[in-house]
Length: 360
Image (tube, rainbow, N blue to C red; front, top):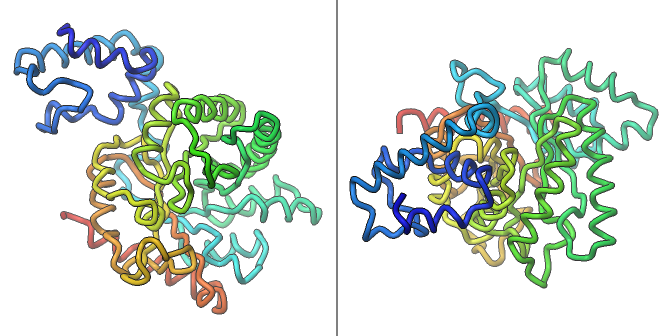
């Protein structure tokens, strides 16, 4: 193999890290994409490109019984179905203070495929005497799945004591959401939203610990981008951290509002393979206030603002696989309305932008 290519591949942590790279970038040779910056474009001739393709094939063959099979595994949902699963993040009707049982009922009545509850709502249900097995049955009986859940354990903080407590909290949350059938749990940089800046490699080490912990519960922690944070507020940072875990469960949870707030360009999504982004928080934002002043309360329903929602969905379609679209807004205006009316509006508008993305 050419020395320049060999040197590039050494930057990844073993074959699993390389497999993550392949998972995100597997189409670059076939589709004429720009050569990754870690490879020297001046020496990448057709012959060398074919050599690289051979390395790719060899790596996949070597890993065929393990890592590669996991990296390119077929998603839980069939590709023959719609490319999108429509999900209700319960923040959208959080202000109505219905409780998790009624939130499930609202999601079902509105016509959603799935629900993304907040952990504090589940915990309140249990503290009130509810049984998780009954909640799981309620969700199933309503024809819903739990595609994700929202929690805030401090798994990434620098302070070792706080981080240990954060991982204990993560264990508690993972256990709880697994018992209602949740597939994923958001993993934002909770507790590390201010300075100092975290190193990306230490952050990757900490994310890997969380991923390994979560395997015991069959739940995938999704590295969530928070645009207002001083850490993990850009798409590239999150992808770097996920890649450097060398863990094939690593994935990124973008949010249309947060990608804008953090200063990333949505076109960065085109570099990510189908398993790297499994879920998207869908919303919109107005032209004013600007990026610096905008906050969660300015989020709009998809299609009601100036965000490139359709373009983002086009990129997710192009990546392949079935994506979960979860509407998440924090609107005082909507919280004053009937929850079912709000939920129906969210679903109608998500479906509308999804239809617009077809064939684009």
